[in-house]
Image 1 (cartoon, rainbow, N blue to C red):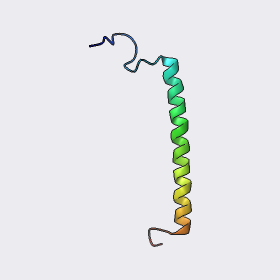
Image 2 (cartoon, rainbow, N blue to C red):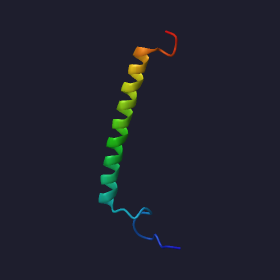
Image 3 (cartoon, one colour):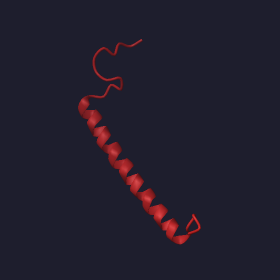
Length: 51
């Protein structure tokens, strides 16, 4: 087994982890915004709750 006595389990440096986190959060927020817009457009086209 490998020894993880120092550092992270992923092997990323703190700087690399922050960079990855920033990219992940930007991508996640972008995907969420696209999904919200798509749901709004479909709702405007054909409401699914019968309202």
